[in-house]
Image (cartoon, rainbow, N blue to C red; front, top):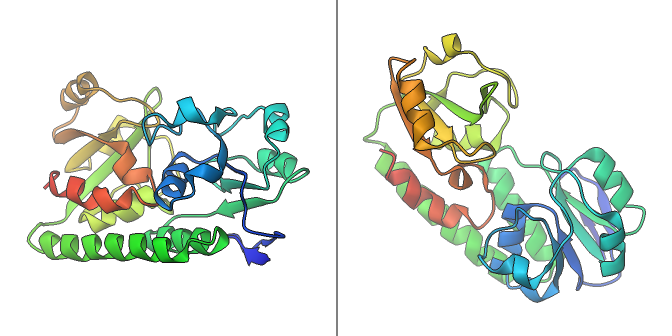
Length: 255
């Protein structure tokens, strides 16, 4: 079986994978929802959904650093990674022993494509289609809901000391746009930002991840800025895959 990943790389497999390692938390959650939990043999310490998964499946490290010896011992026939969350050096090392499938996600459409491709790769296309249809329906209902909500100039912070924000060409930026949030950070990826830049925003969002902003951080920034500051659940803005089924319900609470 020959398939392509989202970087258009060719992956050769002799059969549907039965021993899978997932090094991306949101894609691990998707694999469970696709019904292939029984094929998962390795995950990261950040794969926290479903809740008890790390008690049942071997943890091989994080998203940037893994235990290669432990991975080899698990004898995977497929490792699932992401261009942004995992490093090039990691992928190159992993490929010495096992095929690596890479996702590359910057838009809502990229996420749906990833679900479809993994469904085909793992022989669960029907379940993948069901998830895609559910997400698409939720998005359509949310777009109708958002017609009554005005645009706001927004900054979405992901880190502190220094402050860093989600900029252009990110999945977070794509979901901000669906919320009628116009990102004031025009640089690509995740640049450092100053308090002076944040003064341009109508609303500053503090994410729960990767930096675990707290309500105290909200109060701190409110004292420095003349705008609304809110704490938001970062999983709904940055986890692509089946998490999107619940994301639009959460987004409604922000308006």
